[in-house]
Image (cartoon, rainbow, N blue to C red; front, side, top):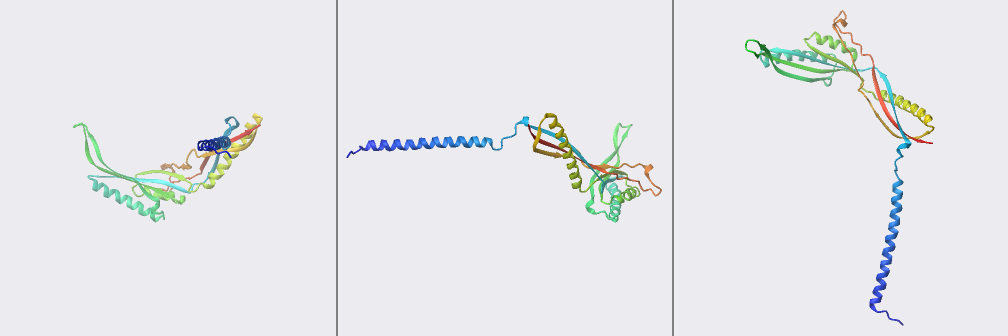
Length: 256
């Protein structure tokens, strides 16, 4: 019976442990390398030379159902209080009449209120001198029943409104029009893509990217002049139509 010295037993044990540790490190190293190689393949982007991006544009026409007009008046007075009193009388009256046309308070919004000194150049003194005060007041009115717009404009002229801007015509909900424009834009992009792919002797495998945007807001303007007044003093306003435009950008993957 051989009896191993204590120091030899410890040495054998140490060597065994080292062998196990080295084996584990090598195993993990190989495993990690394989995982890294696999992960490099997951989500690997398509090579740039295998893709092409085509733009398309679609348009849809709709009739506006909202008209926005800005009504304003300027009042002069020897002092601020006098000018404000005169201005408030005009604006309060026009706002009450707008409400009488069933225009909601939510659609009547003060957009500007200014008070400033009215000055005049004096040649004798070579200075500007105060000649009183001016109060200007503007409200934005959203007319949801466009058939009432002419009445609103005529009413403004009959009640000392001195400034009228607009109207601006918009479409309240453009969801359906945008969907129509989107379909046309994609169809245009697809047709272009087929032509390009055929010219290159390749074919489209799939779509790998898409984006869309509206180059401009969908609104229209109507202009008026005194010559457009009818016998009753009511302006003739034609809302016409609005155009909704949608641009798309589609990226395709090509294969031989």
